[in-house]
Length: 156
Image (cartoon, rainbow, N blue to C red; front, side, top):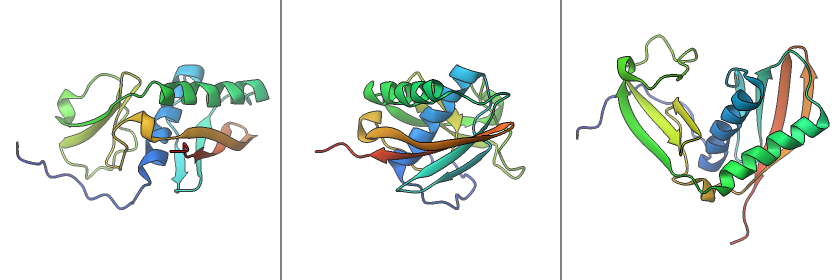
């Protein structure tokens, strides 16, 4: 199959952190019904994501987010990439952050049965490659929750 022509990607992500961002986004959707992060900054050593929530989460809820992300990582889910015409996308894929000039063919990333989204970034091939997700801190300035996090690599 011929490789589709896609928009250029201007970032060099660290695959484990970028993949955990996908898992965190889907966890927030499932727990709070909010959209994917609207403001994200991911580096190798740390990351932050902003979510729109009507009320601040409790400390227990923050621990639940961390626990659920780690449970997904521990499932050792495959991370698969496919190419799809934007008119044939699976239901529920949010294209609101897609640039206007994006090509008709989109790259779709699936994290097992947990998350599916259009993405040009670098990812691991299996969640077993991620390590342990740790929320470092959070703050809430209505209506934005900012989560700061890192990955603790597994000892190998």
